Amino acid sequence: MSNHSIVLKSVEGIDTERLAKAVCSLADDSITVTLTGQNDREVKGSVVNGDGKRYDVVLTPERAFCDCPDSTFRRAACKHAVALALTILQIPAVEVEERKPDLRLKRMRTSDELAHDRARRLPALPCEVSL
Image (cartoon, rainbow, N blue to C red; front, side):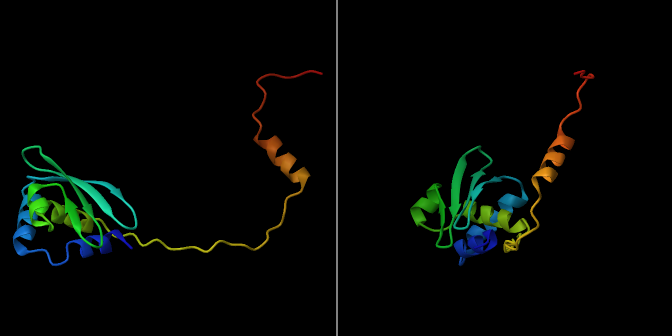
């Protein structure tokens, strides 16, 4: 699942008041959003408000989690979760192309070819060696 899919699912049905607060806070730079981790099941970040208070946010396909009083009390997505989601959505989604390994047999190099290649990679000696 892509980060964009996770984010969209986690804030699905967000109320307009929380959305408006998040958009305004991002627009006037009164909050700072930092992405702190991501995998195929969740996106983690932190949001720092204008007073320097930091809130940790986790977005999963099931819901958004934040340690702010609003989210804890209402058990719903808060402006911090929406701000993280909007920040993630601004980053272009990267589609990873799955490549299948090439299992065809290739030509094997002989031991002479390997020795020749190794000899070419050896550094030149700084002085002449006499035997």
